Amino acid sequence: MDGTYGDSTRSVKAVGSESIPGQPVAPVPIPASTFHLSPDEAEGLDSYGRSSNPSWRQLEAALAELEGAATALTFGSGMAAITSVLRVLAKPGTTLVVPADGYYQVRRYAAEYLAAQGVTVIEAGTAEICEAAQGADVVLAETPANPGLDVVDLHRLAMTCRGRRATLVVDNTTATPLGQQPLSLGADIVVASATKSLAGHSDLVAGYVAGSQLELMAAVESDRLLSGPILGAFEAWLVLRSLGSAGLRFERQCQNAHALAVMLRGHPAVVSVRYPGLPEDPAHEVASAQMKRFGGLVAVELADADAVHGLVERSELLIASTSFGGIHTSVDRRARWGDPVPAGFARISAGIEDTDDLLFDVEQALT
Image 1: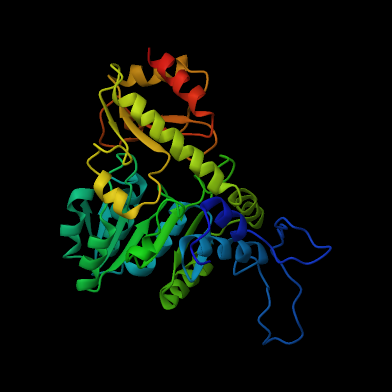
Image 2 (image 1 turned 90 degrees about the vertical axis):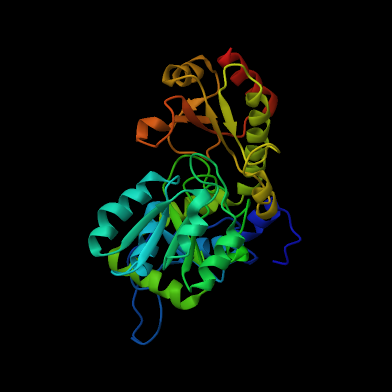
């Protein structure tokens, strides 16, 4: 696409099928694992669902389109996508930088598996990651970071990595390709969970890798084939079904998140608020330079754990959920998972409710 379309149009066109009279308009699920073989053994047709299948290919083409990549690969989860890329890139003897303020399971994988294989693992927060990258072979950045919502200057980080021929991997889960495109800012490869805003209905788990370096993507595809962290064909169809409305849903989520952040920052029950879209947020300047939208997450600190629980209990609209990006506004007290945050810190994932209804509900629940 030439970039002139809006996000909803891009989402619809990405999942569009070829216009053939008498054929379905919507994606058709093909949940088969075994295919009829051709007598010509050299013919490159589908043979087994773990290597490739039509459902994957249709979804992968859509994801590549949205990320601005040459190709994409689907996985059974975002974590499966990340670990596959790290297995390919982080070899024994290399130095890997992972975000200290990003998704905690990535740090666990790096510390418990990769370090044991001879990889030097460095944990660096958003503010220190460019400096840490100066001594790295592979850098994994998450921006905005989950759950604190700090933002990495991707152009600066990419220049640092390029100067020492390090590979830059960017987790684009929080922003989505409708919020930012890391490949255009210099990243070598993108990883993400499609479970969140892209699928957006809290009914599946999926992940993907996107990139334009074909040799690197081929190595990741080989790892997927051999290790088997694949996405089911039916789940691929579910993501395709949802992806067409992702632009519309994400626009409302971002609108609601911004409105919530504005309301919360002045509320007496709130200790602090982080949202990259707020002009006074420490990440606003960098986020404004590289993000089209600021995302659907708001980080808020209340007095203590009981205050977070009370917020959900008194609300008519909020749900308690550790995943995010769904149509319901959800709240997750992150200290329960071991994140290094205060007991009253919560991540709010804005849903698609009417903005006025959501603001009224949250304000009365706080009061």
